[in-house]
Length: 125
Image (cartoon, rainbow, N blue to C red; front, side, top):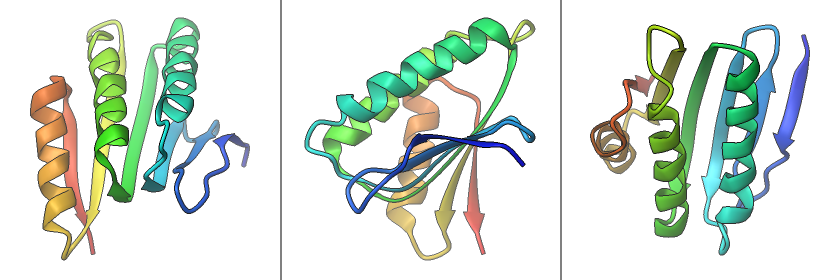
């Protein structure tokens, strides 16, 4: 299994990894950075570079908490992704949330609508 660590993550910064074998980009943890552009601008560049070489990507987002600055930056990433449309691109986005976390459930639905992306919002049991 070959996993590329794009952002190692910490208490304030999400861990961002890419599993080359499964073709899955994952964003997990907490996103409460004071300067979220430091995290999300390089992520946007990584996604663009990936989609310039390949036509498929699966993105899985599983955050336990995100502050307003990070939320806006992540929404911008999702809006950028929305520009890569079928039939040329096959992009699958999954937003995961814990069973008792209604706020993250609603945020996932908000992103799906506001960013104009096809995103599955799923509860983790």
